Length: 311
Image 1 (cartoon, rainbow, N blue to C red):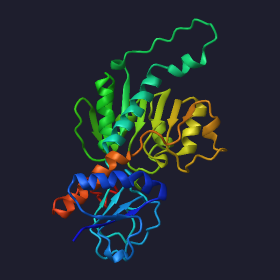
Image 2 (cartoon, rainbow, N blue to C red):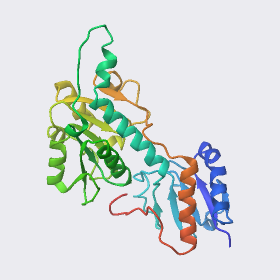
Image 3 (tube, rainbow, N blue to C red):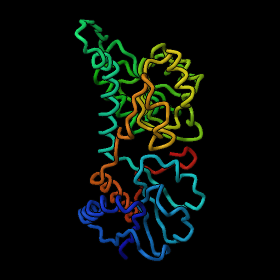
Image 4 (cartoon, rainbow, N blue to C red):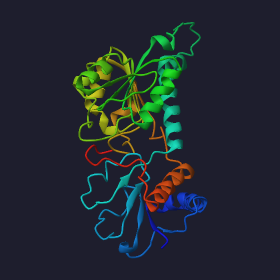
């Protein structure tokens, strides 16, 4: 029997993904029914899923084999008690490449003090010579697929890179730290801090007032990970005191970021509108179809979410 695949995301996403999914299914030799409306849920084998979709109760999907998320973050669905089948998250090569480009671009921007050059085009010959990358300490919090890729890229540029994760990791060229003591060490050396942790109850507001105080004076924070990783009020207070040099933020607790939010007008904050990395339909479709192929063949799923860890 051909697998039946429900595409449970927005209409715009359906138009974006349909052609790529059908192409990937054909390339994999899979004959399947694919639609945003397959009729009775008890006849659905797979759900290609965005956590903001209309499907919030999985109980009627009695034949369901797996839920395949289009998002890298699964914090909005991992705790759903009606979801009792395997859940996978999106690990997409295009998403990884985009995140590496964003992180390295903004680390270099702050390392080279490009903002100062752009703000002082007045004819005054004021020289600010940056240190070499091999003299600059960068810390990446989170050493999953995205964090490890960014850490390796920054190390490849010559930066002194440390990475922290809740469980021990090993990334070539990176000083890998873990646990509470490791976090203190990672923060204390972070002239530039990049946040790429998943959002879990244990990481919500991880960068709070106490942890901000552990950063070196004038440190820069770059957050392309998850908005709630940061205590917004504590961050603004540290910027206002001069303890932090700058914050470049791509993700926020409320998105779009409200026009009245103080981040917009703060002279030491750069806001980018959640563009650090985007799932590309072409490459993401290949990931989705590969997991369907594996499941149909009785093979382990890729990027399976650990419900206890939350990612």
